[in-house]
Length: 189
Image (cartoon, rainbow, N blue to C red; front, side, top):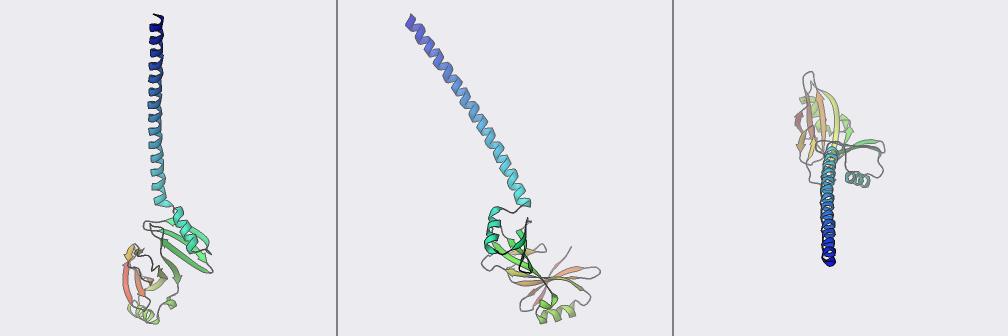
């Protein structure tokens, strides 16, 4: 009889310990699942913020490789690109990186007199009622096939000048290729 009570007691203790252990495992699993969900929410939240406002580390690292002597560096994430404004020597440059963290191209402010002479003449004749607001030169990274977007318009990757013209009622942008051919690009808002 003592052996039966002893066996029953051992069985009761064993099943209680096993039950308690299973409950603890379930509690741990539930807690771990909740922790994973919270972590995923944080990651999604961080990624969505990063995608909207900040440039990722890979772009920053690639920029450091592409422009090792850059100073006054400022990163910003825009709708289409990671943009980096910086100074190199005495030149103020803006670099555009695609979603693969590769350089799509750069822009730099230029003077109207930097345009090919043929383009200057054509613009002054055809757009006599406009004033020249600014000129930028886009230098394409030929090894990257990403189309560039400037003034909210996409264009094929080609080195070009963009000339902003304004009059009393309009503001427009012309595209000038390096050979001096001028074409209308967009109306500015």
